[in-house]
Structure formats: structure tokens, C-alpha cells
Image (cartoon, rainbow, N blue to C red; front, side, top):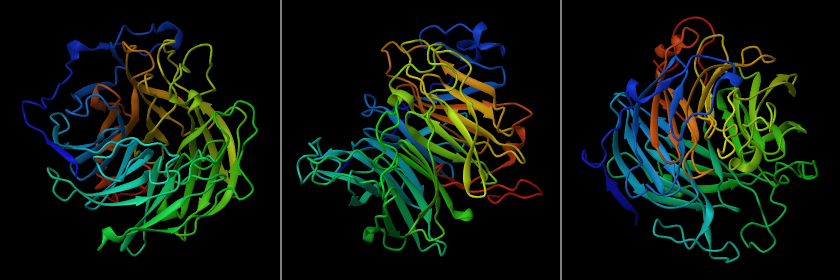
Length: 467
């Protein structure tokens, strides 16, 4: 059983943010911008804050995580479950329902009428009524939950799959015949005292979900990414490599990029049940390889470094411009070739958790532009068309939260003309960028967006794959 909270108009009023409530600052050098006041909204002149929906009750006290999109709906994960929002009119979004089903982190993806949620914290069982339980107990459960979301007001929990070391994140890879979808599970941190998470781990878990019988989802392979061990001894690592934190797949090109703790990895996924490592790299400046984003052509990868694990003040002057940042790599003859770093140019307070986090491409032909979350550093739009000279072109953020290190944007993604951000405490924010460098993207219409499963848009010519 799980608890379903239906959204009523009175309980789920949309808090639109008007121009009078925000302070719009001109684009100035970082040194000229003061740190905003507590929770004060600041943004570049080319950004508008069009709507905000507070977190629904009763997941108000647990933080928002990742976002997925399908049709006119957005699905926002939360440590307490997930919520569904109607974004048919992004300026007047509406909460449809919330499923209460606790389990860290509940990162979500959607495929057809299925929603997948990652659980990377040991529970007493696989139900939504489960409680926390030590991973030293063999009966503890963690893994992936699967929901039927054909009725948006009444999602149904239909299946769970237990995986070794849980599921910190996951990535969908559709079967080319469209009869199944594969779920790549990223997990790590084994320990000898954990019966279901034994060292050295260093592997992926791949689940196959038959689309006509999703309740028959099962593990089909567990390929080892690091048969000889990953990066474990580099000075400054947050943790030694014992698996991957996140994987981004580009199925139509048959490739994937893994952000694997101390390593950056390229995979050949032309056989989705048997991904093959084709390149690996390390970076002495990186503490924790967190996530990856290909450019549209698939010849670049942006990797993020989650310095401090997301709980540290790493966007201050003391940390500097190259740590806790993005690293831009070009792919040359199958090798990852480092080109430059990018970090937001606005210093944050020493009480603000801030580091490179989840983002997505903005679909502009011939350009490499993405929007990205930086926890309390806010939301940044930046251009890496010139791999060696990336630059920020827009931003939105709030001043320091009243409780230190406990706020910020987990994810910020572009979908059908708007930017959507999941903020820990403030809920679900919707922004609009008005800039000649990105305006072309307004004409792109996607049917589905799982950011960790990239799909292309044409660099030249006319027509879009989602029209």
C-alpha cells in the first residue's frame, strides 16, 4: 500500500512570482555582485520567474530531487515519494497528485505509462509503508520501484526489483524493437558487513522491463565496469571508486557516459544488455564524478564534480573557479580529451551548499548550450560551443536559506520552451529565458524527456523529431 494525496485547488495554490517580488540585477562581473539577502530572488535580465508550486503535503518536510517529463506532465522525485504536475500551461501549473513512498533518493524516469524510482537507502521491505532498516540485516530491501501512471490522479505501485547496493540513480535505455526498456542501475559504497552489498562491487545492474508485462521486470546482467578496480588512491577524492554515481545514455548513437566517483567512463551500449567500456579518464582536480551530459552531436561530454558531496560551500572565493565545477571533454578517436572547466561566476555565501549538479541541453541548432542546477548557486544557463571558452549567459538564484547547507536546486531542465527546477524546500519553479541565443529552442516540442536518456535534435535543416 501507499498513500496517495490528491491535489485540491485550495491545498495546492500556485504561488506565482511577480516582477515586483524579484530584484533583477544587470549582468556585472562577479566581484560587483553582492550576495543576495536571505532567500531574496535575483536573476539576469533575460530570465523571468513565471511560476512556483510549493511542495504538496505531506512531503513538505522531505526534499525534492530529480525531474522527468512526458506530454503535458512533469514528475518530480522527492525523498518522501513523488509528485505529478500538469504543465499544459506553464504559467499556471497545477499539482495533480502525490504518492507518499519514502526512500532516498527517489530519482525518477518515465517511459510510456511507467514511472521508475530509485531507492538507495535500506528499508524494512519494498512497500511504501516500509521503515528505515540497517543494511547489515540481510532482509533489508533497496532497489527500484515501478509505478503505473496511466491514471495521473491515481498512480499504482506494480513492481519492485531489489539490486545489490540499491539504486542511487538509474538510466533508461529503450530496446530498439520498442518491446522492452532496460534500466541501468548505478550504485556504490559496498561494505563487508552488508550482506546485499559486498565489496568490491564496481558494477552495473541491468534490469529488463517487458513493456507488455512490466510486472515481469528482472535483472538480466551485472557487468563489471572496473574489473581491475577504479580510481581509489588519488589525493582529494571524496570516496574511492566502487561503482558509478550516474550514467547518461545516448541510445541512438549507441554510447553512454558514466560519472563513476573517481573516474569518467565512455561505454558502447549497442548491445544494451552488455555495455562495454571503451574509454576511461581521471582528473586530479575532481573530487567526485557526479553526472554527465553529451552535446547534441555526441562528440563532447560535460562531466560534473560534486565536490563536498553537495553539502559544502564550494562556490566561494576560497574554493576558486575550477573545483566543484564542470569539466568539458571532447571525444577524439574514442578518447576523452579535456578542454576546460566551467563554474558559475557568482560567489555564494559560506553557509550555502553550492556545486555543479544536474542539467540538460537547450536545443539550439549548431550550438552547445545547457541549463544547470547548482544547489544554492541557483540555476545557470551557459554556452560551451567553444569548448575552451565556456560562458554563462543567464542565471536565477535565491539568497542564503535560513538553515545553512539545506537548500538549493537539485535539477534544472529545459522542456518545451521553459526551464523547470526542483528546489529542496521551495518546491517546483518554472522560468522563461528570453535571449536571441536560445530563442530558437522555443520551436522544439518534445514528447518525453528523461535527461539521462538523451535524444538528438537536428543541427541543420528543418523539422524536429518531436513535431
